[in-house]
Length: 197
Image 1 (cartoon, rainbow, N blue to C red):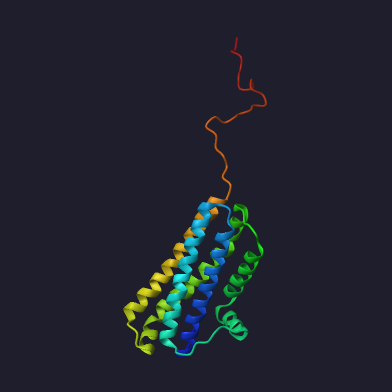
Image 2 (cartoon, rainbow, N blue to C red):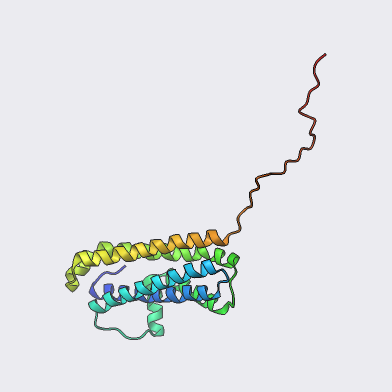
């Protein structure tokens, strides 16, 4: 977690780039999904991540004037700062790019991996909400605005996680329930007792 002035700007920049990768991941999943309903939900998540990326990038640039394009050294730094979530998103993005089409079963199996990403990012955004006061003092940004932005970003992550659950439910085959169930008895007369004479 960020400890000083430069760390906060770098952390925000890392989160912005993570959201950009998540955008690319969901955009790719949407293009490869064969289910139109799921495709629309995936693109909704994708553009939510793009929006979050732009917001985090803007805050990062407000805080720090030093920004350059990503290099391999930065990629390793992102993995160090963001941990397993950075590697997970990159690996999923690589796997999705190699796949031609995705059926519902494959998408449903990805939900657990994708959901864990939102859990981790949500925790990081919640932490930023707690750091909002320090950030606003360091960078002369209005505290209420900053807290509001981080709250919106946090809610976006929660909404995306809920949509993933809807996608999983939509892609998971449901058991058919019949109004006329078939009941088979092994010995249908076993319940019948003849009257006592």
